[in-house]
Image 1 (spheres, rainbow, N blue to C red):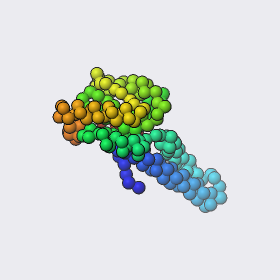
Image 2: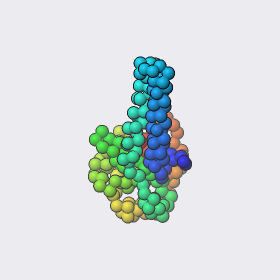
Image 3: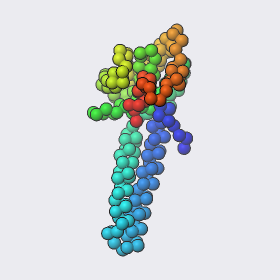
Image 4: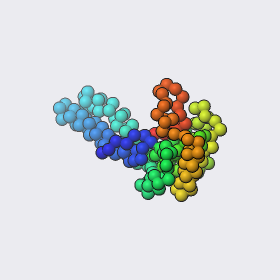
Length: 200
């Protein structure tokens, strides 16, 4: 199983597999400890039962994490290939799960360039304006105001916008990769970094 880092294509699928394996292992450990105590002491009233009960906490957490990733929607292979054909020198991050108090927003892909934030929803039924407002709120909270934020549910329109941003990138000589690589830990995150940090 190839590891995928946050922002890479296939990240959500990777996290699903990790969550499945981790939850199964945790559950097997809990059951093994509990039944070992039952076999040795012929009773549920032993230290083994207490240890098994305590280990139910991380097992439960892992199960909740698994359910969340099973419900999550990422970037499809078809959308990834379409984006790859038009992205040029733009920095694209994939497979975001942007969380809020009310709901989760599944973002297939996003890019940030010169005060423009552009994203493609993985959930085609998403209310784009809600997601845009949430991203704007998070960006302002990180010190970035005045950004144009647009979330698309249509892949073709998203790719058209990427083409426009790539043209702008060329005209202004912007290197998004250099901007990200020059960021130093402990300093204010880049706008693209903020998008990743508010995502699972």
